[in-house]
Image (cartoon, rainbow, N blue to C red; front, side):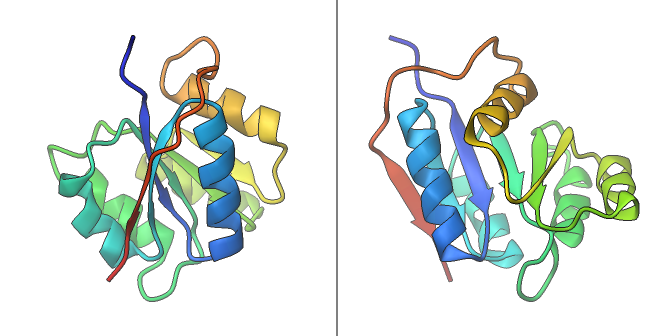
Length: 140
């Protein structure tokens, strides 16, 4: 059986993070959650990840700063990042894409569309059908 793909969720809103953890787990992904950019950076080595879901509005350093940081580090620069944020301004989308994001999804999001975009980001045809019950939380 193939190993589950792993997604780092960088989201400060615990309700949204729990929804993402549940939905991605049901779709067959393993998840790790970090509530801010600094915790996410510390989690990058501890949690082997295939992709990142990243909010812009994080406490402390914002998602743009985190994205800029990881794209400047050789071992992280090729990890695909999907921005998942309430910010919908064209300028924010352009900044995210210029910094190296693969995709941009606005909140509130449709579950099926989000799973399709994650699968596409990871180069998969469809989201995995086998539920995964394992998740990790990486906090300060």
